[in-house]
Length: 415
Ligand SMILES: [Zn+2]
Image (cartoon, rainbow, N blue to C red):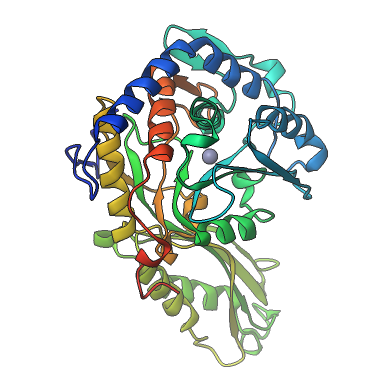
């Protein structure tokens, strides 16, 4: 499970605020490892059945219904309280286990995939040695299978916290319908375990870049480029100057990037352009950097009399920083992993997940708890069955042995 590679540092197991494993915790770890091993075929079959059911993100509730039905059946656990909330992009599935009140732990996953309807039939799941291949197995049917199995192995009586498994239908297309419930539950939870794929080698994602998309529009005044160009105000010139200034907001040393991905405008070579627009993609490692760039973009003013400049933010995910709460959760996870005989690495990821929705509020979050594998969103998508077993035991132990965190541990500056 060790993740070498860029941005990755390993914390030796055992560093936690709790004594790392009294005998009963160690015995539970051994038991979970043994039980996960005994259920290898069951785990593989669970991933296989999930990956054999299409769940195309953004295709609407009807397309998602077979996957939601399958999951709802799998979530019928003894002592569980399952609720299913219909939505335009598919049902939101929420399973509550353990104590009916008190501090909560959130386990967060999504069942939609980037694969269109028909992919499951075209590309059936295959097992090739340790590699299980199929659409969505890595992102994130493997993580779902591990969490569901861990909850089955534990049973409600071994969960010290009220434990909520929330499985959403629209992560791959921006979580528009599930965002509010995700944030609501995360803010009530002492910590949150996110079932996204890990870093290469299995490291957890304890930081993620923020991401924002902007549309910048310039307007000017059309005129004949040969007869009376002085009557025109070029929106393209205005936009180019603004984009040049915008590019100056990037900071390579901080890994703050600004990409102008689309540019369009004008009506013909012989006409001074009345309109032009561009789409900008901004990524940054910290909330402060995201705010600095947005402030810089909003401060841009048109340079030409008669021109105007307008900025719209189309999408935003705050950066997930390695807050003290995240660091604490990771140290505890290392201690739990050590009890299972595993090394756990951590690192940062350029992509975003639903963890970006709430980490900036100071919620302790561990992301990348899904099994190792590769080929996310690609034809060679696969997971490693050995890692699926390890993650099942690890998730189980984390749920049975949570860190000593409370909601009040959150950073005071968090809004
Ligand atoms: Zn995912």
